[in-house]
Amino acid sequence: MRAFCRIVEVGSFSAAAESLTVAKTTVSGQIQSLESHLGIKLLHRTTRKVSPTTEGQAYYLRARALLDDMDDLEASVSLSRNIVRGRINVDMPPAVGLLLVVPALRDFIARYPQTHLDIGCSDRVVDLVEEGIDCSIRGGVVSDPNLVCKVIGRVQLALCASPAYLAGAPELLKPADLLLHRNLGYRFTATNRNFLPTMHRGKESFTLDVPVSMFFNNGGAYTAAAVSELGVAFLPRAEAELYIARGLLKEVLPDWRLESIPLSLVYPYTRHLSARIRAFTDWVTELMQRNELWRPE
Image 1 (cartoon, helix red, strand yellow):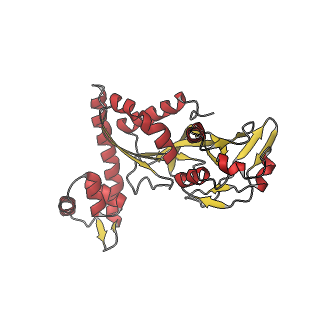
Image 2 (cartoon, one colour):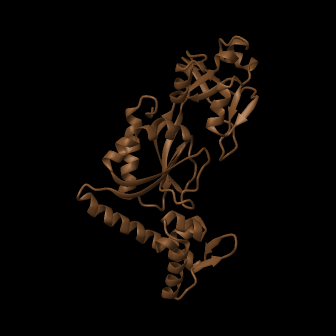
Image 3 (spheres, rainbow, N blue to C red):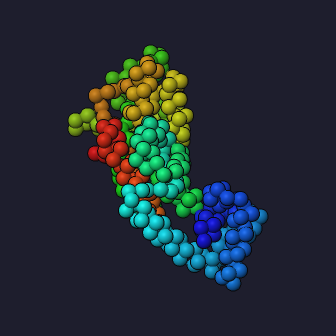
């Protein structure tokens, strides 16, 4: 049943076998046995993709629910001995992973030594069901009606540029001066829309809807462009401060506050949170609450 569910979720025998850390021939044999036992064909097989039949889709929905219940049953027994175990597949933006989660993982491992983490750090929006992701941390507004969404933190931003760029550029004393500068823009991969944060100072506000000389859809490349003297960028403050301390970047217009980006924990409505997933979500929520640069407003 697990092998069948993974095939439906990832669309291939090879990917399912890799996910389950077994041989492809083992998965193929299990599916043949399952179809023989049930007396029905569960999967359509083509050279490009494997997809469930009508009967297979109905079986998947019931089997997925049963497996989740089984996981919860095992977890409840483990919890009685204060044990949380199993694999946890999570996805998050690179900045969150590199600057917050990964540096703190020793604490999580110490608390739950029998868990195994599979962490993805990507700017793209992953398909949680198809890619077998248990939960994800996402930045910005989450509009997918199929996902449970809970705001757990925020990304504070800082407007920055390299000292070398600023030395050769027009003086930057107020937000309107950005019209005279090379501005670097960021586009979300899911929508291909550029992000336009608003700056605030008291009752004044200024939306960064200014001419952009370069667009990026990858946070690492966006930061590299700012460090490489290509223009003015709004970066996660946790990241910007590392470069500012090394003299590679300088914060501009520091008396203006950029609005922050909400960070949400999401998982499918169809997926029941097992003890191991809840352990991770509670831990990362607590981690953000304790950190001044990441806690929600």
